[in-house]
Image (cartoon, rainbow, N blue to C red; front, side, top):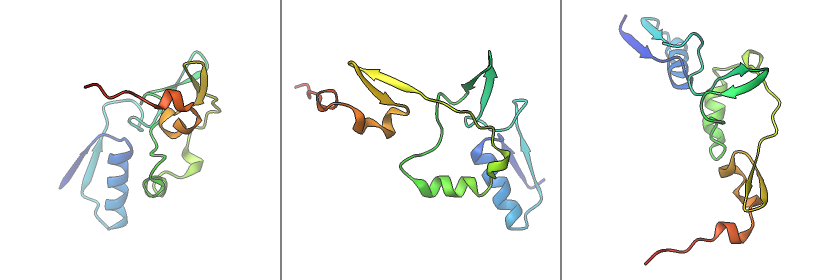
Length: 116
């Protein structure tokens, strides 16, 4: 093997697929977990999805990154879960992930005082 890829998460699998697209076959992907996916995987716990990566993985601000990744991860291979996750901030309900939905917060919750 010329290349060793540690981890079968999105980065490792994307690199492996890019190698294959370019005719490079002397690589090996090693994954310590029983399934591939890295931080982009969920497992079922008590009949409900439990996100390994802390709730979300995709970069909602950079759709070109998602387009790049999804060319290697065909939708028919996804494990899909219906979710309705929300966060309550000072009595206001905001959809999850909060960084993509910060616009739903009240202006008083967005303002902060600079110390000094």
